[in-house]
Image 1: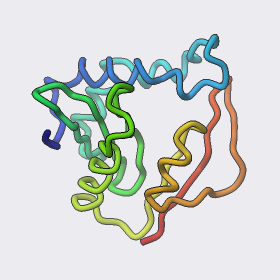
Image 2: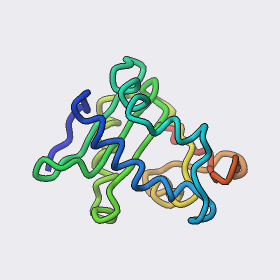
Image 3: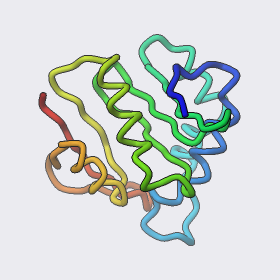
Image 4: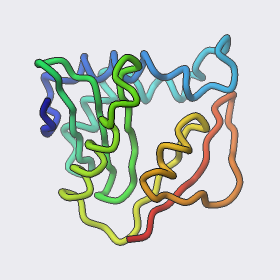
Length: 147
């Protein structure tokens, strides 16, 4: 296993990983992703984030396979954290988060969690901020971590 900075060659693998997990955002499994959200999950969108200096992107690999991905915006906003379904519950998200925090130092970290992932972020020390929201079938909860 290894964690490293994501690069342009990783875009299609990252995109596939995140799209395979995007159903966790939806309130109903039968629903489709709204267009505005799907547009953030294209290869072009991932490439733009990887080459944009405002984002820090990391991947977790096992035997050369990308099984985890984390993106921070502006060193303090956790933009994406995804782990392949067959690798969840193995501490990969915690390892990615710990690695990113050591690279991207901030006093306050923020995120918009899917409703599914709230317990994971609470385990990292994040607290819910305000009420959960919903837009076009996508539920979310704002959270923050003060260090």
